[in-house]
Image 1 (tube, helix red, strand yellow):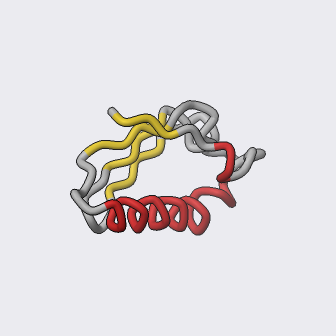
Image 2: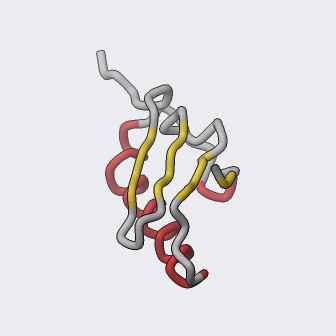
Length: 76
C-alpha cells in the first residue's frame, strides 16, 4: 500500500536562505519561515521556489491537498 506524505514534516531552505518548516506536507498546519533576506524581492523569490519545489516533488505524494492559496504563513 502506498504511503502518503500528508502527515510527514515539510522543510525547505531556499536560494536566498529563507527556511520554511511545516509539521505537515499537506500544509494543513501553518508554514513557518525564518532567516528572511533583506530585500522583499528575494523573499518573494524564495516563496515561489518553495512552492515550486513542493509542486514538483511533494504534491504528487499527497492524498488530497487544499491548494497553495490556502497556506497560512507565520514568521518564526
